[in-house]
Length: 248
Image (cartoon, rainbow, N blue to C red; front, side, top):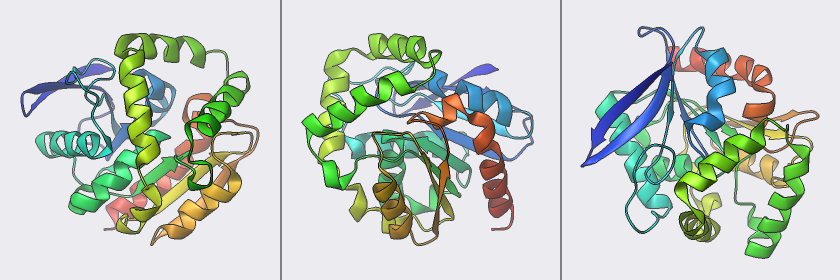
């Protein structure tokens, strides 16, 4: 695995990259407070057959951010700049949690950059759009995740700091992702773990229904971070999206 650095409008953007240079491309977009490390179990599996890049958005992981946390549009604009600068337009996008909101916003202003999309545990559930309810769901999720996830998240949260996490959370809470899903016109799979308290089955199904070309898959026995705890369950889905990308 290599560290890739790309200058995007004065910001050095970091991505962890693995896989043959001439292989089909996959881009991983992490959730709130998280870095490329959040996706490494999936990257290692996919890197056998695809060129996978897990990007650190500004303010998270190794990519520096501005003093004030970016809102969803700021994050998606930064992602668009990085995709253009690295020539990854049309790659399969794999997003988790808040990363799904970033990808949905990307589709609003830069739809030409999207390839097929895998939305893993998409937030924010419009039926529970309050800080209290969302925080309660996150607390409920923690004991359901695999123990290996805790040190990964702890280091990522420490790196970006509580102030940036809190400000980004407020931006995410205000983001009406349901109004943007219709702009995601590429084939999209919505995945939810059956034990995920953050993303209800009803909300995940609603997300899939709001997508022009969406379908819903539930992974039995897993919680919110399906990509980290059960990456092998997602590999066949990504393969099918890679075939869709090749046929476009």
